[in-house]
View (cartoon, one colour):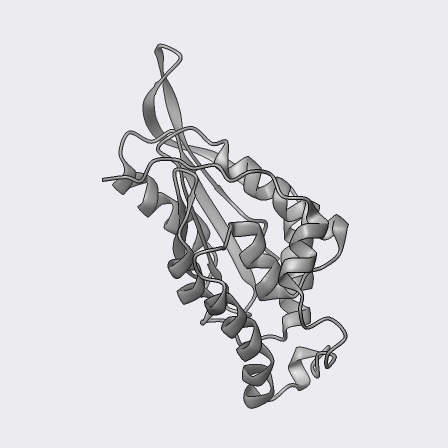
Length: 204
């Protein structure tokens, strides 16, 4: 059965920043240029972010999880993430959203909405997310409900790039329009059959 949609109250960006950036003022990323970083250096950089995610299980929203994972504290960047989450949650059922990594180790995402079945929507979301070469994705939102543990599982795949590099790539992609297309016949909406839609993040 598909979980019912749940919409968390809007959060002020500064509240997210306070709640999710306890490491501010700590060590600066050792790998601003990820090509010069060793695998062990990158692993040690991601480890505290992953630990903080797991510590906050049960209290996470999509925006909060992204802020923790990518060490985001800027009010403008947090607003961008909150807007993205809100847009995803407004998609008509059945609506699924997936996120994952591409061949370079950066974050990519994709989604599907207005589907007749949750199974088809979930698979299309994964396919849209993983449409680029070497991408691997996991569904982390189902009809507006954030799937915390699945997000943490996905986050553990990161490590090919530094936190700084992944953050910059993610925010740049978030600021561009998603690629959206009709992928089939959807479910009933406003007394007529709507199109089933798919979308994915911009690629390099």
